[in-house]
Length: 404
Ligand SMILES: Cc1ncc(COP(=O)(O)O)c(C=O)c1O
Image (cartoon, rainbow, N blue to C red):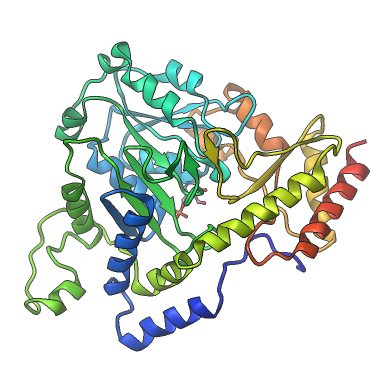
């Protein structure tokens, strides 16, 4: 493939940082994970950030911390990646899927409002493609008296908050802004993914941002969750080496979902270059916008408006007035030109597993329509201007052949 879809950003700075970890002898959770957590918290502007081995594991951890379980409902968009839903299912709770926003990929606040019941404990907005949801509208909704009075807590963290929790699935939105605040400093809790295809990566990984309203103690929430990520050990191996040797206690029902120092080394080295990396993504985004303007059949995405600035994670186009077969044919023709395209997302009710649970495509027509018309184009800092032009020409040529 001449133009792959999303190769990781690995330059000499990244390689050196990983070699440094290898030479240091600390390859699993150690000083670099600690450094990444402090850096991330400060960069985003919250008290605490916690590194884990994936956003999927991180979302489940946060839901469990909030006491979400059997009988509880968590509102999620139908138009998202599977783990937004499976993190809820793993807690024994019910994902309540809402149909997509009619004109964009973001969460429909109107549909969320209709889905709230006495059992709703959490709403998970998803910043698809790095475009933040309308958080002020969402917070205004859950703060309304009639919504607050429906909230029936059954765990002490729920009682302390006294309302529905907003946990952002910000898998895509590291470095995106909503009304001047970075993703991570907007929702109560935010889960970012550092998977290999994301803007910043640790190969596999995730970062959890604690932004609980005062008087909640974000430090305590960080500490107790950190212990769970390391199998419930009171101290991890690095802390034991620094302090009093081998002795540790098991103080919680733990999981093994810690991030390694090798992964943190990749992410830390990338964070040192993140402004330039994002600037290049935004440049490419604007080149695409210019190259595709006035192209028939295309609905183009936004990179900014008066409230938001995206991070150029994905460039998601929609083919207007074309069938799903025509969309697939466009992808296939472009692939023949050795350019990889992708689809974000196939909506959850279109998958066998979710259908087996009763989530049916006919109940989510907007999400299905979006899924059937979407194409994601390559966008990453290493992409050259010439390659961007090749993608534009290939996609336009395929559309003109297929969507007549
Ligand atoms: C919207 C969304 N949420 C969650 C995830 C899960 O991230 P991870 O692979 O780090 O578990 C992804 C992964 O692509 C995603 O796209």
